[in-house]
Length: 144
Image 1 (cartoon, rainbow, N blue to C red):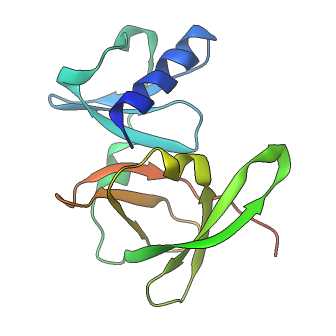
Image 2: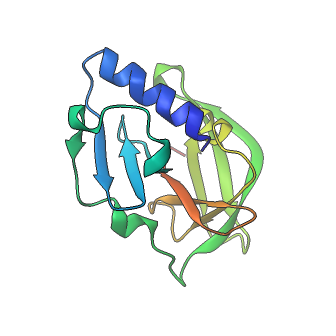
């Protein structure tokens, strides 16, 4: 996810008295605003006040590489659901499972590879060049 877009979302959330959750270490901050995604921002690039955010210590475990993860391909399948959200279907490279995620969240990402373990596991967004996990997107359960 593009750091500028992430920080803009954080500012908007703080201005409307919403809750921003963070986990920080010496190098970076993992941030989430609406429970559908979380992203890493280098600590030196953070522009918002960390004091106005809620500490949460569960994000770090989601940003760990796992051998069970499979490369996901973005398909052209779209679905409009309640609330006007548009979902896009991701399919594992071996075609053994599919995952639906919000299109608006994928649109925030740059050059990436997507990985997932199952239809219900978080989708890990990895930087195409470095392979580092930059963010996670939670899947959306859909009716058949």
